[in-house]
Image (cartoon, rainbow, N blue to C red; front, top):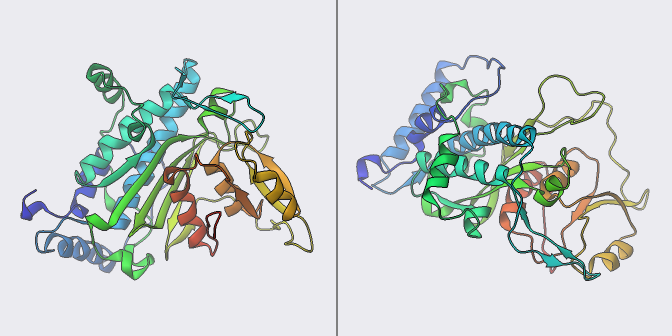
Length: 345
């Protein structure tokens, strides 16, 4: 890459023009100083001694638009009825029953769209996307072209349509960062097994941004938010996003909502996967005196439950958990004072 175009930050305007803005909400006008601060950040990125740099707030804008467009793709595939389910190679649960590792047409179409948008934003971006990483996208170029051809990315977005100024982010994220320190972990459809079995509301799109291996920003698309609920109004779907310094946005927490009381005042309320592949899970639940309120194999949905104060924790005691499952949610939890830990602490 030539030094003159080394920064990936200025590419955001082009990337956003090539993805479809689905929200009809009018954003407030920005002040001249806020627009100048954005231009300055991008100018500084361009002059970074020829090194490729990434402006994280701009990258998150791209993630948000990918989630918005992904929500619509999943809804379209679902309405069409032909989910195109494939088994990537499942595993056995603790009782010996086989559980597939499903992939659907929605997974494939959303990931194809996302890869195109991320590469448009920054060709050298370190991107770990589930289906591509597991070699499950297929190698038929004709099929890939057909998938991309069915995704419209000719919107008229621009960065000034965003309703949060970059100064809301943590200072360390306001400045362009060397691209070698940034990674994106992407799951085009989390909870695919549940989706293939008929679940809708718990399905999510996960996009996490890590800097130096630490989750700093996350975007969760939920295409069937409030699906089948009596209080559902307007179009289905939402996008929850946030990160270090800027907090979390897009949640639906009632003003009078009360979180479950913490132990010992009440039970430890947890969310767990439906299929148990790890013998440690039940002993852990018993030792923590837990009450399982949600049992569904959808990690992104578990994070939303935590963020909306409907559970104290979520347990993912299985070797199949990957960073594309956890990065987005952990970044959002960190932004609200929560966090994640490994089995060993």
